Image 1 (cartoon, rainbow, N blue to C red):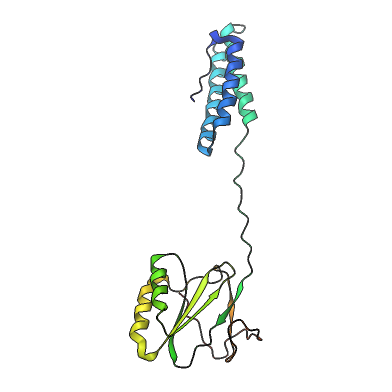
Image 2: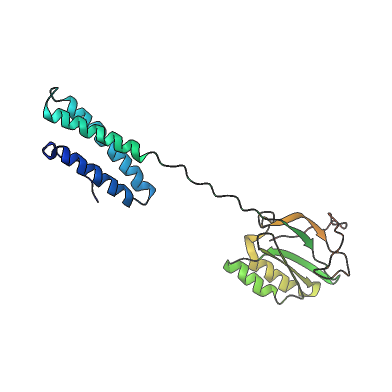
Length: 211
């Protein structure tokens, strides 16, 4: 709908019809850009018709009409108001899951850890990791899955292929993924899911190679 201010010949009835048309138009506006354009149009008309009224002799019908039209545009602009500030999304609240270092068997010498995900590269790495001798998964507070993979020294070529598959996605941000990065190592002989007293640091100085 294209609004057009009425000419002087329309008189007071034209001004009333224009007000109604503006209100109907405002109800149909659905996006920010159109709202901004509408405000600019009303402000432009307010200034234009005030200028036209000032160029006429005082008491002239056209001068009074243009002054009324300018005033009407100003009122409509004030009634429409300013653009409300964008709503801020509430930060997602989650409880970080403790990051546990898996209990790798001693013969598993080549180890890496990476976050599963929907990307093709992560999917390929996940599918390849399923063929490894040791696979462990743990869930984060945001629902992300950390995959821990280990192979013996005799399968170094397989390990290299796995590293190539995950590529430059090495060293992901585990804290953003929902893990408590002060990980704890599971004592030997404690099965997955069983309660145990956690060590806050790895006593052997091991570091997780996170992808």
